Length: 327
Ligand code: NAD
Image 1 (cartoon, rainbow, N blue to C red):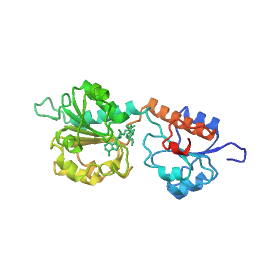
Image 2 (spheres, protein in one colour):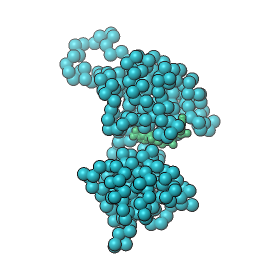
Image 3 (cartoon, rainbow, N blue to C red):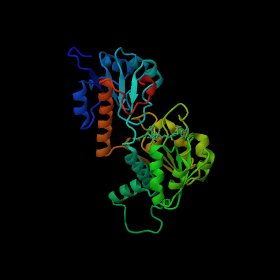
Image 4 (cartoon, rainbow, N blue to C red):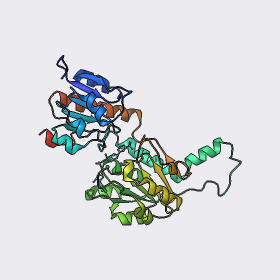
């Protein structure tokens, strides 16, 4: 609490309207000093005296931060919360919230964008055309992979994976999925999706798209053995979290032509991108923008601010990741 009695809310990075107004109504907003590094000790120092922290995915919110006296809530402006040690939050009775649902369509759209762009070599083609190399139609110029009617393998069919399956229907794709939690039979039927084990998914898919959260189990879920199981013509799409994909092994697999290409939005050590990826023409690279539409980022900001406002007023925020803290 601040001296004026209003709860102090540490805002790690600015958010979009209407988020700031919702926060200002709920408490005294303290912006994180922009010149300060994003390490745990610095965040802990800034969080002293704060009831809540509005964090983003680049903020390491772990024990050092979560043990700050008086801290009640960390509201992450993202659906993923792998930047937060949820077990430590629960042990310290700190609520953790995220922003599920509002970014499903934007993210699924972008996974499909990467799929299409990589399959049809759009980035290469654009560079080729801009640089004046287009001298006329040629029968074998920029040949790519078919999308319509191809087989799509989805690793993880939660909210976003299902959204991608939905889009794939319009492209008459055969959809396979791998997920420990099976879809209800009616959803499987509606999406035309078949549950298979990971080996079969990798062996049969023309496109493999990853939609799992980053956890200990999903870290490097795709590495050398998995790339070896994929078709030589297959394309990997990752819009989940970078460390789900072993990036060094991916570079090796692409160079060895074990797979045909990759469309990536996320990286193992963001914002660094493996130098081996940058030089490959059959790879499309985006700077973690899958949810970046004006409407979606605004809704994420509003949702995170509402989660914070509810919690600092003593309520139970709607998007609680660790409900055991507030029953
Ligand atoms: P979700 O919780 O609705 O779905 C995740 C699915 O993954 C679940 O069905 C779960 O059962 C499954 N899963 C968990 N472990 C698995 C494993 N080992 N193998 C296979 N499946 C497994 O989550 P969501 O809202 O669909 O989001 C998925 C992830 O996408 C988020 O956690 C986030 O990290 C990422 N994401 C990235 C961006 C971006 O900007 N690139 C945007 C939104 C979400």
